[in-house]
Amino acid sequence: MKKQLAQALARRKILILGILGLILIIAIIGLVIYFWQSPAKFAQEQAANYRLYWPQESEISKLRRNEKDYIYYYAADSKRYVFPDMSVFKSWFGDYPLDKIMFASIDAMSQSALGGNVTVRPGSLLQSPTLLNTFIVVKNGLIRPISDEKLLTQFFGDNWKNSVYVLPDYYFSGYVIAKPVKSADDWPEIPKEITINQDKDLAK
Image (tube, rainbow, N blue to C red; front, side, top):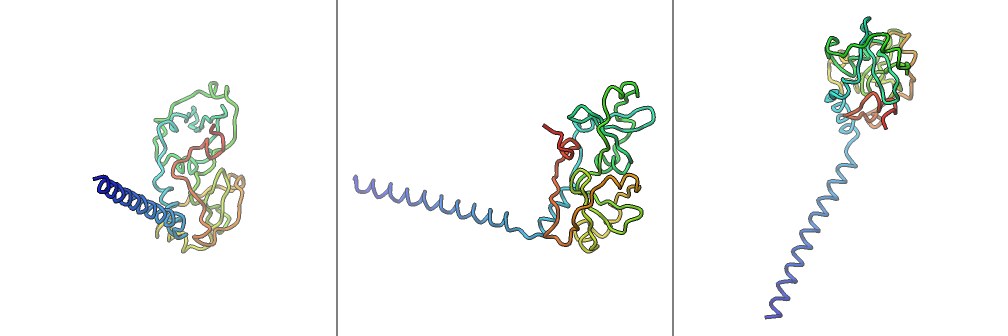
């Protein structure tokens, strides 16, 4: 009887070890697939992250507009950052109605210091009226040129030009141009969820 019980326990132990081993193998395969995904797939995911973004209500609540319809973002450093151009606003908030943004008088706004300009949201495509390249925004005004239109078509679709924001040169001059994106291997990582606070490294 004891011998039969021992054999049953041994079989059960082998079965459990076999299941655990199978789970481990599946997990390893999953990690390999995850970490060794093709650069093109990674770039596709980053482009998808950009398209899927939509601001949370908590972000909209940080907006204020004044009598002249200038729009400001009240950031974590207790300063207000201005949207210098509607292209910049739309990159973060799309076609959100301006009349739904909470109003604040100029006197009330004067109580908060100006922090600077809001820059175009990471992942956006950007152009200048006097530069030939199309740029992708990486973070807080850092941009990288993409000279190969095939890359833009591959990751933003045939109508990628409809997604480009054009900034006047007097705003564009505030952006920093980094090294070009030459292939999918070099595609910048674009977070699906990002706030203006995080973009400016102001979030605590």
